[in-house]
Image (cartoon, rainbow, N blue to C red; front, top):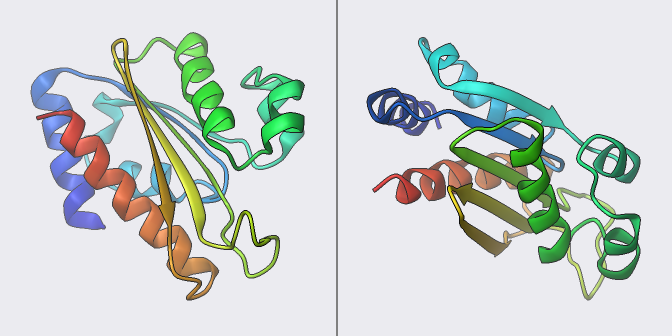
Length: 157
C-alpha cells in the first residue's frame, strides 16, 4: 500500500491536483494511507469517515430516499457520496467508498466483501463494484484501499 500511496502523492503534486475522500467501510484507512506519505499535505484536502447512514445524510447530504431505496452499500449511494463530496470541498479529485467489511452485515444480495468505489475527476465519474473474498474484515479493508489507490492512479493517466 505504501508504494502506491507514494506514487499517488507524487503524481498529484506533479499535476497540481487536490484530493478529498469520503469513506465508510474502510474507516479512514484510505485517508490514513495517503496522509502517511511525506508531502501529502500539498494535495490531501479532506477526509471524511461517514460510517453511519446518519452521517452520510447529515454531512454528505446523501438523500434519505436513496439510502432507503438502494441501501447504504449501493452504486447509487456511492455516486451521491462522491458527487456531494465535490460540493463540500472543491477538489479536482473526489473519492467515495462504501461497502460491507464484515464479518457480519452481509446478505445473499449484498455479501460481506461487497464494496463500491466512486472517483470523480472533473465532470467524469467512475463507479466500480468489487466483490472481495471474505477473508476477514482487515483483508477486505486493505484490499479495498489497495484497489482504490490503483483506480485513482489510473484516472491520472
